[in-house]
Image 1 (cartoon, rainbow, N blue to C red):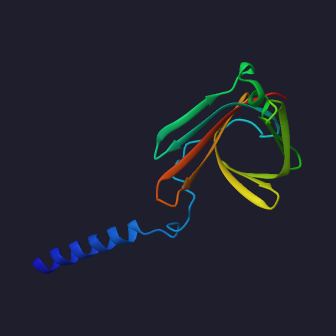
Image 2: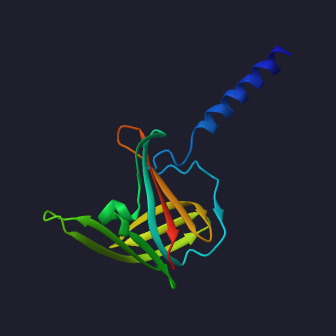
Image 3: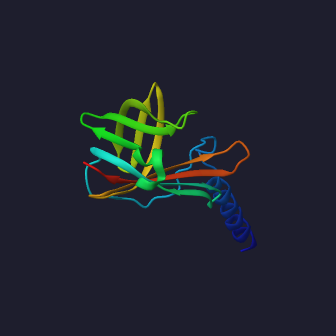
Length: 159
């Protein structure tokens, strides 16, 4: 009986060791959030409404975008078929003139994973909500010091 008890404890310890290891341990992207809602196709022009930055689940900054916010209130992303992507970002230059920068690329979607490739660089976002009027996306990255950096973006459908 004592031998069976020790054998059971050994198996439990082995299970816990194996369960704590993962082939993704060296990957910098954290994919532990599973909830998402997709009610429509991604194709359309989406205007930025808000962006939030978090470190270790603590909000560092939140910016609500509205027409009174000036230059950045015009930022948008547009997804067209077949998988063409355009991003327009506005910033004030040194002369306080609002300047826009266009970035073109390609996009792909697999369930809640959205991958955007710009200039040979691929960026993966998680779609948390895709409805008739709202797109919520975000990504998590492990920083060099081990902290979790998260960025979340909310867009509204323009066309």
